[in-house]
Length: 525
Ligand code: HEM
Image 1 (tube, protein in one colour):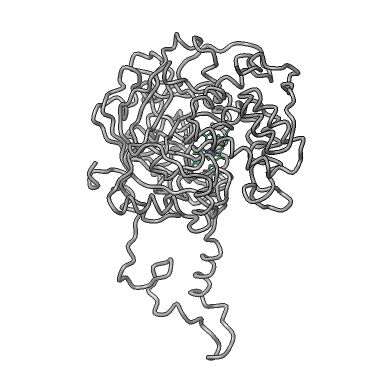
Image 2: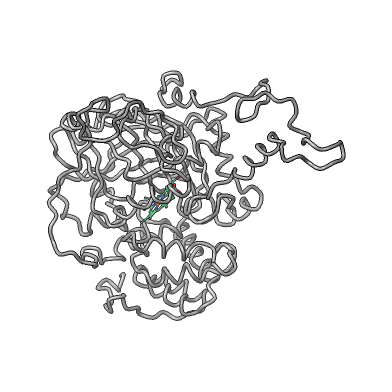
């Protein structure tokens, strides 16, 4: 997409200021001749309260910081374009996927999860891979990661997971730097995390570059076509440069010398015209095949093996422009897995369902106003028309006296009529059953895919994974936690468990699951 024809760039252009060679003004537009000396009573006297130039400059400075993201605080972003090469109209009516050759502006933010905004890029961690598609039908957000599965199956466990992984609350020292007790304590008691642990201890968790990692939507989503037919879908992004990692020794050295390594790499590649590119692919599952897998499609700790359902490559994601202003764009962008367009819907995955609540809720406090959708980077290129009004920092001046419906006065939007005329409608789905606080039995196998992943690793990769576990567990100060983790590993691979047990000085015990059972597949051979 040429920059001039990029509707998002054009929209952002209206909000961009170039200060080059301009006279200095206050925020009220008043030209001023000196902002280097305060107004004082006499050249050596006290500053005057009436110095509105001093007060404005310092007051604004005092309020420059906003809270960092509660997770994924450390990140870097870029503008780009998404192009669909092969129409998905058979599966979805979403125009940006259905119209072959269509180009859609995007903003992508990569991140680590656990560290603070100033932490090192090379931490052993999951990477966020969040994409905002500025489609003509509204913003669509795919808020994914570089690992295709997640630690937990239910959103209600997310605060526990994050409390366990963040710096320990007494001394606020990041886990990577000191003890690892809380994270591994939680993991050792959470068998469902074992598949993700295999990925997180593998080289995938220390990427060489943002340009060289995969992106996954993780959850199963739904596609709905013009006829109303539904297919399940998993989203994939495959880097054209291939998937590459650094070794742990390299990661620690790089962190010491240049903690902005990934940020710099992305920025410089784009400045130099080496635009990062990914193939976009989908795994499509017909509705009638929902129950044909030996795991539940709604379980976010499982992936669909590509041998069972191949990834069809249908588009390209290219990043081609650095932000003009990190704060205004990368920091203020607000993603949300519930930002959908017609033709895409979410599933009943219990992790995804909780995320649908969390993002807007956190952004209300992070960005401080219910009007954060009006911040230029968050604005839809489709004009917004509704009856929502007022609130802190409202920018839009909506005309007329009608801000309710139904109405007979007119002047507002003819909402009732428009609703009949297309627009987003949730996919109808039969739901029945008892109201329960219990997970489905179809979610209970926690080890088969962990095994699959471990066995898919080459010998050097297995060694890296094993060394990562030994390094991590050697930082755990409580032997019972080390022993429980080794007990979990023993359900995945006995040699791996034995090698780790030997190095971290614990014996192998057979663990019971939280429900008291021992997994049927406890013998991995
Ligand atoms: C960011 C919550 C699971 C990917 C965030 C943020 C919250 C959050 C509160 C900060 C948002 C902001 O301040 O703008 C949750 C909850 C989860 C969950 C409650 C589980 C119940 C996941 C999963 C993925 C994911 C499974 C990947 C599929 C991301 C990404 C970001 C993020 C990429 C950073 C977005 C950005 O770059 O601004 N999450 N998350 N999260 N989350 Fe999640």
